[in-house]
Image (cartoon, rainbow, N blue to C red; front, top):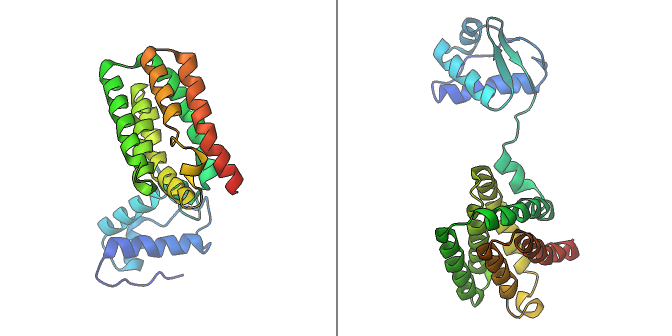
Length: 230
């Protein structure tokens, strides 16, 4: 089946889209070896460099893979959804479950590894959370997440820090939506300040068991609200 020549620009994007359509339609099933660059270039009416870049784009989407000395083969018929996109599409309750697993361990590590600078950052973020509590809404959510981020950072594990950063946008939106439905002032007169202060105190004291316990209990409060909402 002829692919058809392309319009002048943007050629790489058009080439990638045309090849993607052929893969999605089943013209080239999973496991199939694609025609060579010269053949594809001729059918698409572009240069080999354009085809090469288009194939790189498809490889980045998980649709094809080059095998040394053998050619390029179809590995999937639809793009692999990237991690941020999957988080955005996930239910906030599901994201929160993973957040609990991550942050409870982070709190324990933070109690073991925190530095004076970490404690200063946590105390500053706790103060910022108290100020933002008067505003409520998105500002309060941002301040709350910022405090938790300082605890995660105090664990001094770059993978944990990066994971939390990936989770933060999905958490933020979910929590902002939740606060629009739940009257936090009525449910928690101090906006959870005592629980958060206890977490910071435990980390500063180097008490791993207490830090883990406080993190688990504090996060369980919001997790319960999410469960009741569902």
